[in-house]
Length: 170
Image (cartoon, rainbow, N blue to C red; front, top):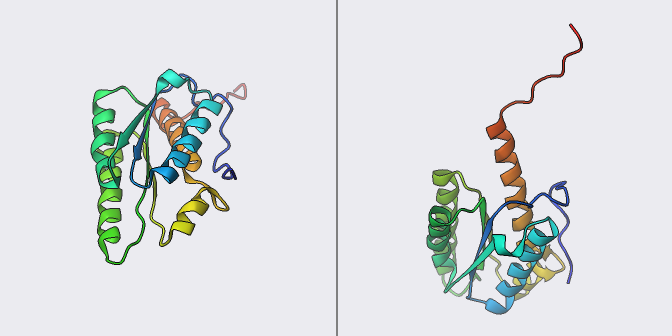
């Protein structure tokens, strides 16, 4: 398996003391399992404890926003990682589905202030999906987990306010 390049300089304990939810579509489960594994291993490698990571499996990508919103509202999580695959078919159904899933995830993030990362792949082919699930293009589950941890840290910094400048003795 090829791991994705790190998208942020996160310290090794960046996820320590934080709670995360991973919402994963069962549709194309042989591939979404790989996305989930990348996200889960990334969180634990960054210091998250297994009991602080909740995984919710949903029937398909369309159900991801509903489960993600529920876990944000009813379980004390610092971020939710949304993973799935919407593969292009013979009709434009995939475009409608991808738009609604993206909109639903973005609304969670905007309405609650809890980071909700978009790890839902929208490839044209199965080969493209495989390349992004641990293949030549890395693992988008890993990248989504890194983005979630980075956003938790950024929002914590914003909430703390600007750092006080150090006095030079005047």
